Length: 232
Ligand SMILES: [Zn+2]
Image 1 (spheres, rainbow, N blue to C red):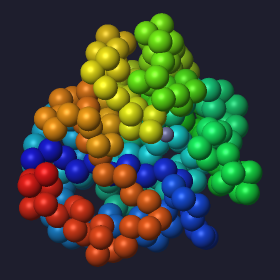
Image 2 (tube, rainbow, N blue to C red; image 1 turned 60 degrees about the horizontal axis):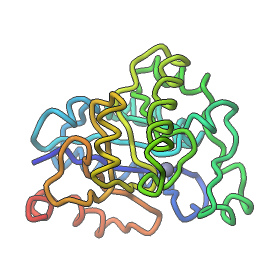
Image 3 (cartoon, helix red, strand yellow; image 1 turned 90 degrees about the horizontal axis):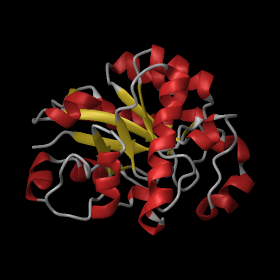
């Protein structure tokens, strides 16, 4: 069985917006998985190894995700943050058409980590991956734009953080065969989707379980059940 890789976005104290979860929800989800015998592992182990393994990822590099890193360290759970270099240059609020209304209502909730915050996280042992430059729908891009989004973000993260950028998370989890080939060509070691398009996932379409505010404890428990995951 492949590692269980969770995909979170923002993590908040108060009422969560659509993509966010409450901090206490995240904590109880992780504690329950650890109690159930999941072994927390690094991103590399999550890609390479099989078993009852757990890895946590945060897409879009919200500052609120950075605030949970001490909690994850306390629980001993390694994490990966997937950052867009377009927002990391100045830590501006995450801005895509799909979330514009939510962001206007609560801009602080959409603040992102800038390169210095990402550097600090990386030096604390957090893996920093690419989430492209501008968070486009990759399958809709021309070959040239697709290559640019994948390569430029990788190069810029490596320049800014002085560590290899090994992993990619597809914006919106969207990928197809052409996008996977481009990710491989751009030099990534692996790439994370959400629900990969193909049933048999390879390392350029690694499945993740996206967790949102509506996930109840019972629903989360069911979705992370090893039996159900094996059946899928
Ligand atoms: Zn994203």
